[in-house]
Length: 579
Image (cartoon, rainbow, N blue to C red; front, side, top):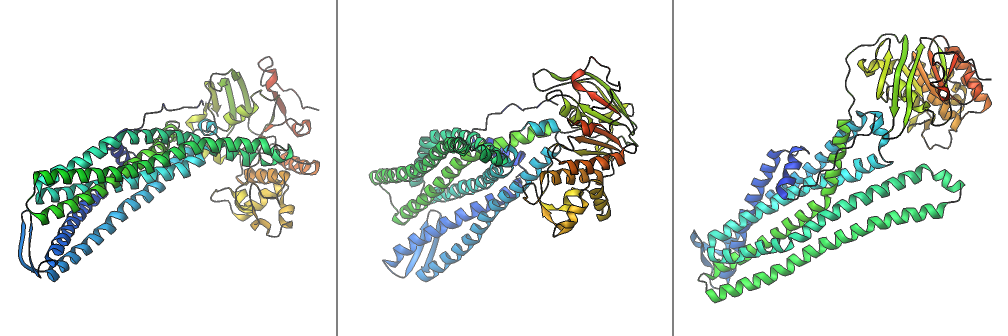
């Protein structure tokens, strides 16, 4: 199956569109945002009241102990300063409780979004065709499912912080409008002007986020590849060129990081400075126009100063949202691509596998030449068939088709005379075992590696499979036996032992069809003899399909299919065993 890429959609450029994406595609519950908004409004009103009380109490302390509150429509007579301060402390306590809610909701939404995105993305990857999985760049999924998703979850938290800051600002500004409309109108120009002046910087931040995403993925790919080839790097003494390559990737990432951090600090500093300038200008205008109520003026100025703080928080959140939006876009684009490549579910049940057949099958990678062309062959139950041919002849592609990891672009792959794709995958893979050329172990015990996440394979079947693969005695010689913890990079497990453990893994499923890709390529003569003996024991009871270069491995085959000779020779023709 060819790689299916979704065209890149431009990231949203306004907060409303970003809000829609987060709620619609990332599953952020609107109800939680409503609760957050109500808490922010209540906190803003409460804070405005506390600030008004502070101004009124300060004015009263300088005159006498009895005061009358007169802030806009609010008028309370004969209050002592102590009573006024008590009311202020009570409101401050209420605001503290509201702030806990305002801090908790975005944090919880961000953590929930991170887990949800990781489950969705990894689930989409596991549900996609092998052709799509194998086409991804090395380290790409690891980078996206960890680093990129963390940034995407930050976007959810940031939208919560931005919402609370904006609504708190609106609530406090409304209070200032009620207390002194003229002062409010003058000062309100400050916030609008500041946001307008700083908007171009936010657009630049959005472009830097895309640059950062591309550079970060390139570095992740380079690091992953370096870990994989570390042995070869030392064997060829090419540490310096590899180091320079990684350094170049790190430097390419450093540029957008620097510019993004600089821009973030510039926006914050510019906002603070411009806020002070405009407040001083606004007070100058009010001085010229004149104002009547000193307490109201003080309360409004103090409230609007706090409004500017909330405005700065909103501006900062908006900048941060643009900074991480490239990650949101990348995560969602990757998920869409994987979902579009999802395998179709097939309900048809499969009984015993009696016959496998390819009828005029063609397959090509991308726009390149056909790897397989007009391929026709038939394999019957109990046969041992060898697949031979030079590199590039299509052996691995044929193996992946037999396993249903790829589907023919033309022609038909038939199982018992029916299209293979019509049978349920669970039934198919319960009857097919596979041993890859490159043996892969998981971090776990020997028994875990042989069992390989499959339920219903007990310890007796694990041991029986290990005996059949010729690895049982060696396992018993290890300190922990079948409980020995191993892994892909475990020094205690040799290449030959890894290969035989993977053969045991395949045999543990008691397959009807066993596909082996170079099963003895990494084995010494003794281990090869053990594996050959086990395969000879399976011959006639299991359909064996063996890809190999070694003539000794192909000797047990009933016939050999030479892909290099196709289509000149009849595919089903027995060619004898290589000697």
